[in-house]
Length: 109
Ligand SMILES: [Zn+2]
Image (cartoon, rainbow, N blue to C red):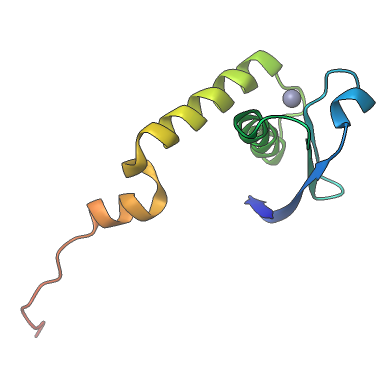
């Protein structure tokens, strides 16, 4: 799977025992390797929030921020995941459907 963040497509891969390899690490993003690694042994919702966590790191890196507050990143990851899950109207295809203007049947002169 690939996730595009800014101008870069990141390869997302699951890695067995990533957490035990690096202590409590559940995921990591490398902007130089264009890769996001997620611990394969976690439950699906934890993998998903971990992916959001790494995506937020990527967005901040792109904006030039080098120091990130992990607690704020977690708050945004859990919050975004919940809001997007519980409000399907906010997903890109849905927003387009809701905000699309009706086509005019009048011909322009
Ligand atoms: Zn982090």
